[in-house]
Amino acid sequence: MGQIKALIEKAKSDNELMAKLDALGKKDAGADEIIKLAKEYGFTVTADEIDQLKNESVKTGEIKEEDLEAVAGGGTQNRYDPNTCKGMTRTKYECVGFLSECWCDHYRCVYERKHNDGWTLFMHSCAMEAFPRYQGYGSGNPG
Picture 1 (cartoon, rainbow, N blue to C red):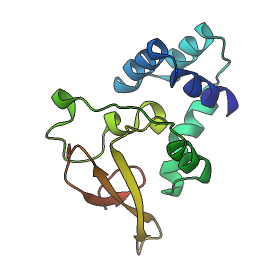
Picture 2: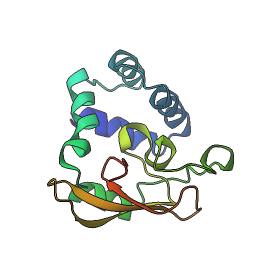
Picture 3: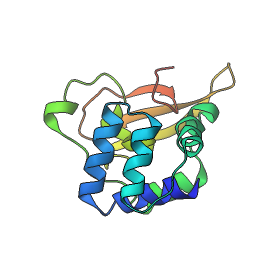
């Protein structure tokens, strides 16, 4: 999964690439479009890598240690847009970015407790108050 992660890391410092990834993410582009863009930037990404990354946090419902380090280490960006974010009712693409790998500076997802169905619940909030604070799964779905 190294190539897709490397592509996302590059996008965090390349506004043009991030804009292209955001456009693909917002339209829920297929793997073929993501692979094509990655190739333009010198990365060899596979459909399996993309699927694995998409399903990783949804399967576990938990945030991995390296993801926490990325957030703490500045792997975020100001993704807040008052035209898009105001009036949201829950976590959306704008909060977490491409493949949930580039969180908005204002988004917080804090461990809450284990749910009786075995999944972990988190408290989701936005410092800009784009949506009300709520309890939900790691994927952002209310719980």
